[in-house]
Amino acid sequence: MRPKKYPLEPLARVRRAQLDASARALADAVRAREEAEQKRLAAEQEARERAARSAVAREAESEALRQGELSVADLQRQGAWEVRVQAEEREAGRVLRDLTADVTTRRSCEAGAKAGVTSGEAELKVVLEHRSQWQDAKERADEAAEEEVAAEAWRPRSG
Image (cartoon, rainbow, N blue to C red; front, side, top):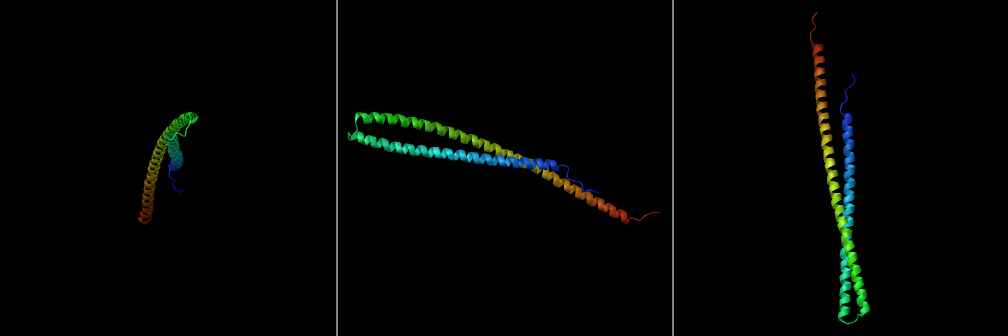
């Protein structure tokens, strides 16, 4: 007699495949979040450096103005420079807000992917536990059948 196969083996394969896909999706989500965080951190660092350079330039201009080394044309250029720097800072702030929002979105995607992996693990665990119970029941039934055959062989025959 051919040994019985576990009837839910196709389901177990499907659950494993789903878990693998969920794990790959989680890995992709983690990688995307890390990249977004790196971009945000780089933008923050760049903003700090730009602010420091602007502060140094403003201080130098203020010192030159106090010492009377600047002409009216220099003051006009300083005003134009200040307008440009403020526009750049506004743009950098907008970019930083967008990057921060992207990080938040990526974290949310990562959390969803983690939930998918957790769900997949739970679904696979249910099938594997059922298979273990099925195998135990099959082994008990096989042992009982062997014992019955053995008992039948030793039973005295009437006749």
